[in-house]
Length: 79
Image (cartoon, rainbow, N blue to C red):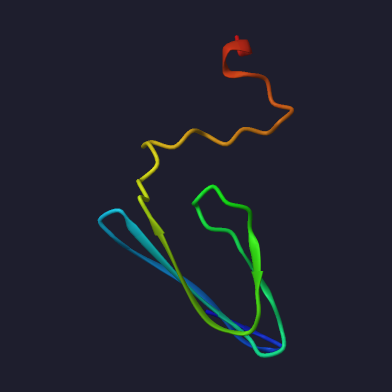
């Protein structure tokens, strides 16, 4: 939860088996961009409470790949 000058903004998720449920709360008279892990483009929603489901959601491989700076030398280049 985050208090903005326009009111409460909130996002949360739950996962049950392979179904991901995402809930967002957008303050009055504002919009938010929602980007779900379903391969579809992000989209905008208006104020209010919104719930979205993503079926067939699987956990990414573990451990995750390290984030490297784009100008850093590749791991194979390090001597």
